[in-house]
Image (cartoon, rainbow, N blue to C red; front, side, top):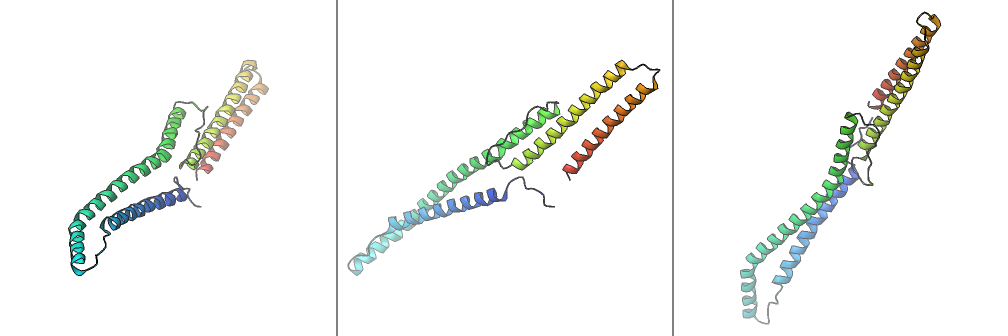
Length: 190
């Protein structure tokens, strides 16, 4: 049985492709900048060509430094942009997930965690919502059985064997329901 990944592989691949394209774009822009900055005709004669080559040689070091700084700046901006994008796609669902777990621990089972299209932890959050619904069902059934037991106890006369057997049947029924729900929850996490 395969284990579901919290972050989908298509998202990871897409992120890597975007990052690689950003790097290629930065390299292409810096290469074009060097090309156009250093694109001088050699001239009509030998002395003009020598003067042009000497000018290009003098400008080459500064051009490379400027290009390196341009690449570094573009990589920095793109890295910040991609980091903000990824953190928004992952941190938002994690925050909602933690908030909902805190509410569940406080005993509030009324709200489900909502996900947006493209949230990377959607499968995990959907599993948590299923678990929460299962807990709601267990508590609902336990409350119904408790009310049934209380009504039977209030009607029961302690000397009547028939009513005592009904009470025992209700308790056994409640135990079976709780055991079956507990088993179903255990199987759901395997």
